[in-house]
Length: 261
Image (cartoon, rainbow, N blue to C red; front, top):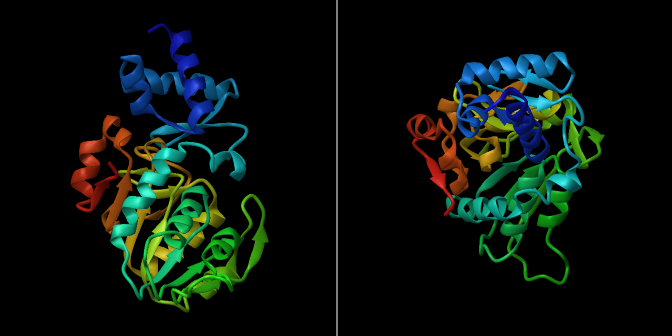
């Protein structure tokens, strides 16, 4: 494939996914990873993208608005969340960070999951509101703890030192996190330091770590790592993740890799 065709392909993938790995572009273009790296260098110099280890992200916008992300790859995210329900049990204490996939996970837990007596600890206002029991509902014994701290919008969630301090007061059975990307060397990663700090505190203080990642995140590195690949107990992905060149290596690195068929 000619250089301009390759670079247009990169632009298309960035517009669709907000991030792209060199491996994925190389496979789709039928060229070497080194060729794609040279394209990344040239496009970064032209101000079209920002290189990250193993891939690239757009210069602007860096992170699509939450109301846009919640509609992207919705079918895949829903399947991942439905499959992840089987990893949860009655009576557990669960950390959940913010983000579009976790909002769907909250809907699934609150819906027909049948789970009871859960304590959900979250920094997301939307997740807290979804899981808080309503006066007209038959009680399932849910307790929802909304973490304090500084507040940001899009989505509305807390962060910062006060949030981290509150997380460290708890010892959860499970943490459920959806990263910006997951990379074999860096593990689960986020684009923003404040989000990574929350995710790191939650994974550090949970007995079992569950990562939910649709195929657009697999094999993609981001700026800030928060959970090493060997510390992930379960990685739940959609079937399209099998097309990622590094999928076999992920299966070897994470014994708890689950494909949500």
